[in-house]
Amino acid sequence: MKPSIYIDTTIPSYYVDERQVLHIHIQRTREWWDNERESYHVFTSIMTLRELEEEIFPRQKKAMKIMEDVPLLELIPETINQRLDLFTPSIVTPLELRLL
Image 1 (cartoon, rainbow, N blue to C red):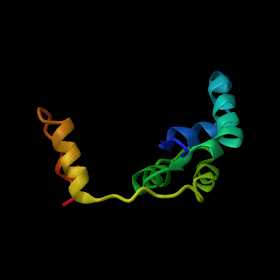
Image 2: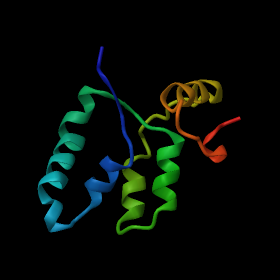
Image 3: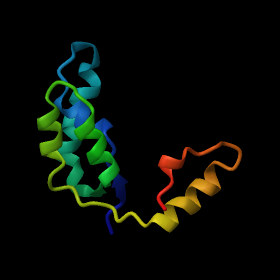
Image 4: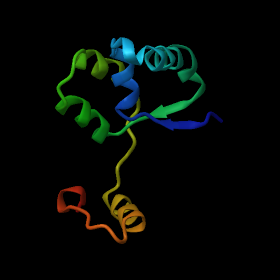
C-alpha cells in the first residue's frame, strides 16, 4: 500500500515558480512531482484549490492545471469541527473557519 500525502499549495506553487533564489527548492519539487509522486497516494482538498484560485501570482493557471488530476479529499464538516476543537482549545476560531 502506498503512503498518502496531502498536497497543499506549496507543491504546485513551487513547481511553476521561476525565481532564481528558490532554484534548489523548485528543482527538487519538480523532480519529486515528475518522478516520485507515483510512489504515493496523493490527494488535496477543495480548500487548496480555492487558495490557488484566489491568490494572484505568476503562472497561476499552470499551478492549477497540474492539480487537475489530484483526487480530492472528502471534507466532512463534523470531522473538521472536531479537529478544530481538538487542536485549538485555547484559540478563538473565527466563525468563517467553522463549517456548520
